[in-house]
Length: 354
Image (cartoon, rainbow, N blue to C red; front, side, top):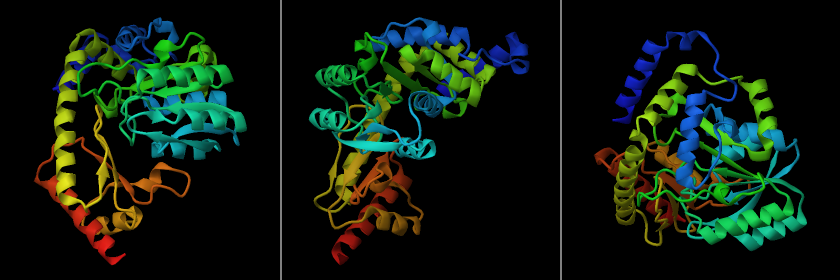
């Protein structure tokens, strides 16, 4: 439904303003879109002006821009562990080192471990996904959000909050952003519509706080601006008021799909398997019996036309060998049910031969 509505918004934008296709957008992004994004941020407890927001080509470009602004090759950046593999790849591209801090689906990052790391090392930034992040799908308690921000602020370490899954709550209530508690401008907020509307539009945004000008310079050097028509279409969609209803329905759908996948995993995977129970998003982090090597399992599954994300992708260290991530973004039809059964069957076979 959102796709059809976005198409209509795009056609209307091009019809009413045909010059969109023959001009560059403002380097900070379309003003009408930034106005709507500022209104959207109020649902997360964040009050900012449109001028404080920079539109980006998805969240990855936003992360690239802020990390380029804050770091130099060889620097250390603290991250959750396990961490999104795209972030680990970005670190490698920028010549950065990931300082991995143990993180749990129910409680978030280990505060004591983070504090020890900050005391021992010179950390240039800390990247977190407090709302239903990839791969754990966890939700930080409010007390943990405040404590992490207070610690990083006291140490003078910028916090980069990646919130691309934040609108996909299964309960319909939008969790507050860590940025909502920031009074120093040291917390940076990143998000996008890739998980909720259309990844092909490549519309993300960043609220860089005190690092606004540095991020803008990185944007100018890297990409200059976003596609004008895509920005106009998303701005029109947000102006229509449909987005809130859309993500509430989407969150309910994801809740049902995650539940169905969890049940199928329980029925198909070997005894001793543990799986997360997220309250938002569409990702499951699965821990198989220790004897199972998920990289080996991945190669065996590929031969039968089945793929998943093995645990070692989510670390730069030698960890998570028996873990894997499952995406529940599609309904559990017979094709995906069969795929889970294949993973479970081959995992059991590997465990039996260990």
